[in-house]
Amino acid sequence: ESIPMKSLSCYNDYNSQVTCTWMEHSKAHALVGMILYQMDNIIMENKEMLCKRHTENDLHEAPDSYVHWVCCNTTTNFGIGVGYIYSFKPNKMLQAELNVDLFQNVQTLPPQNLSVSLTGSGDFLLTWKAADGSQGLGDALEYEVTYKRQWESWEKAASLLFSNTTRCHLSHEDLVPGSIYVARVRARPGWASGFSGRYSEWSMEVSFETPEGSV
Image (cartoon, rainbow, N blue to C red; front, side, top):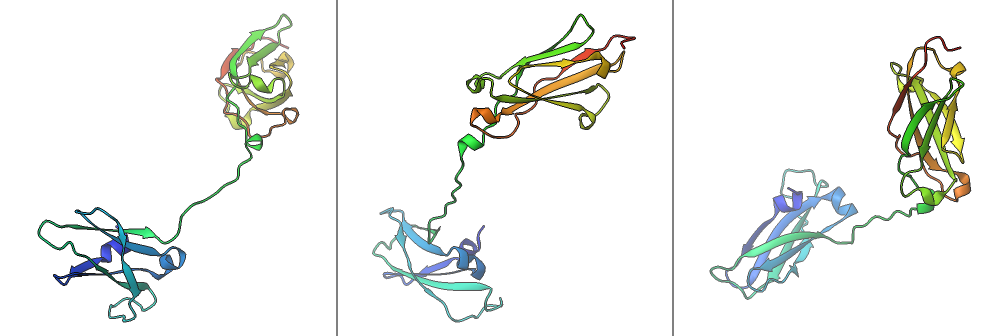
């Protein structure tokens, strides 16, 4: 519960006057002050109360810690069953703006259908396609392929960069015979697309095993 609401205390003179006292932290007031509103359950109209800063400091807090207010309002709706609702609203509009160039903040979806096949020469061919919704970028996507042995961490993975292609050739000479490898790929807009942005999330992983005795 906020300090203004926690400190709010109201009373009336059984005639026409309602008086409320409350306080707010001085630092909060310096940034955004609060306004006290009163509404009864008959007319149901929110009315701003007239408030004056209370100069006396008869509380135990340090003099500069809080701002004390005394608010008054005149009403004709006194009687049994009449209830009052009090609320606080900031004295100025609170908003934040951020200008974002959508052409410079593009993140595509991960590439799809990553697969691997063994060629006749004993090499491996990775193929994939651009994610649905990314085809509008045509061949202007850049890709990063990383691959590693199954037991290695991705921090130790080899990395290859490609553009204008959706395939990657892995020579058996760069692979350890009799090992299980794992590969993945991600995409981002290339400079030729007119867009820029960060890499997509990684694609689904694909695994393959090098034959024993490869050279």
